[in-house]
Amino acid sequence: MTVLGPQTPSGVVRVSGAKNAGTRLMAAAMLTTEKVTLLNFPTELVDARHKARFIADIGGEIVLDDNTDQAEIKCGNISAASLTDFNYPIRTTYLLAAGQLHRSGVAFIPYPGGCNLGARKYDLHLMVWEALGCEVLLKENHIEIRCAPGGLRGSEIVFPITTVGGTENAVLCAAVAKGTTRIRNAYITPEITNLIELMELMGARIHVHGVSEIVVEGVDSLRGATCRVMADRIEALTWIIYAALSGGDILIEDVPFESLEIPLIHLQAAGIDIFRNKSAAYVSPKCFLHGSIQPFEVACGTHPGVISDMQPFYTLLAMKGAGRSLIVDYRYPERVGYLNELQKFAPGSLSWEAGLSAVIRVDGTRTFQAANANSTDLRGSMAVVLAALLAEGESRIDNVGMALRGYNNLAKKLAGLGVVANFSSREG
Image (cartoon, rainbow, N blue to C red; front, side, top):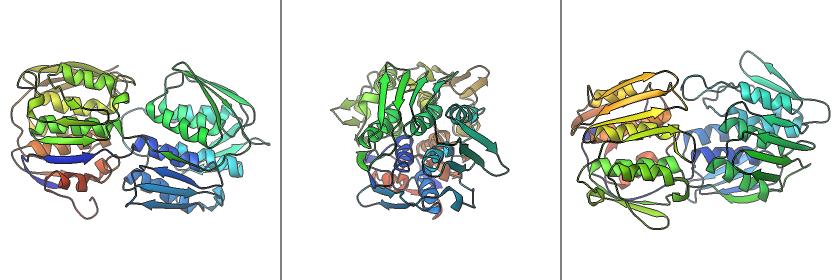
């Protein structure tokens, strides 16, 4: 991608359905032979397209409608044995197991790919499958999971650490296991709540107790259903911060305020007071309480706080602050790879260290300079893209397709705000 900056955006942008919800709902659709319809679905998302390709490759039927933002999925004829190519560059391949196990008693899934954010291993997924009575074999190019005779069996699963993926995997598999499964130290995010909403519409028996326990009573079969994918809270925050930094005026529609309460408190602490109603936010230069972004400190980790995926955007925000800010990430201490690329736009503004937590010190600056940078991970890539849009001169971002894994219709949305960015045909 190449872009000549700085550009001042103006207009309306609508937040798409969440990547971290929509792709999970696709996995739930694999558990039934009946049609599942997903509304507000991010049809152009790269990760969603890879999962759609997987479903089609094992015999499922899937239609992604770009005009209506809907996905229709029917998995009456999926077969685990039909897959021969395991080249799927996505992190959440564990989502692809439950439907195969329920239908065939065996599952073949690619090894996790996606962003390199340090030690994000899949040992907790192995623990889930083994707890439910499966044998797991690590093959050369894929993972093979085989149920014990009689299929998945309910059990107690106690996670040693909170895990989004482990919780999702456990809920999906337990819904069609025989007997009751109790999941302790579960991580119940808004996206997992959306997943449970669909599964209950499909006939699953899922009971959430407090903030960290889920009890699932397995059923023999699930039915079809229609469910709306929740709006993407990370995308919403991205547009809010971009609007504040650019000096533009943007109306951001379909903002999931209920899942952004604490992140928005931190923005207000930085001197940004957005105009809002029930589902939309308007950001303009008039939102600054003190005329500029104030230095701040924020700890990034788990919901309901500022989640680690939001860390790059607070770093970018601090780079335009009037002083020194501090960002600490205790969830993914190795989420620092993008910083080398981001600091090219404001040399000397960033310093960091990675230990038990990532500690990022940011000295604010008024102007960004154009740079040639590379994409590293999904959210870090998007922060670099925004920096290029804010910089003086022409910038180039290589491998910007990384950002498209999490931002539906990015090129089209930027164009709708009057922002000219040249994506290659492969990227855009």
